[in-house]
Image 1 (cartoon, rainbow, N blue to C red):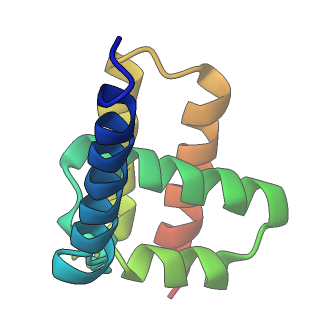
Image 2: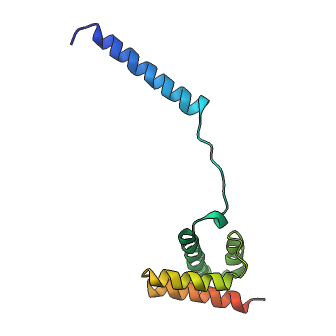
Amino acid sequence: MPRRLIPLLLLALLVGLGLGLYIGWVAAPVEYVDDSPASLHQSYQDDYLLMIAAAYAGDGDLAAAQADLAALELADPATAITAAASRLAAAGLPAADQERLAALAAALAASP
């Protein structure tokens, strides 16, 4: 490799690095946008419901579970949890998780 080629390669590398940093940080930086869980795909909403049920099973805090469920903007959370449980059961959800969902649905149905 000729000696003149090495400085040109280093210069090209530095120009590319500088251009990449400029584009990434100044010209077109990433814009993070917060979105609500209500906009999630149904399968992800089911996973979200399962996480809420697992948290409720761990601490028994129904008020916190209701606050988390409010983010999904469900008309009837107990019915939505029951439907999610049946969808997840068809997908092979373990019995322990099905019981967690059933316990949360029962607690929601019993609460005023």
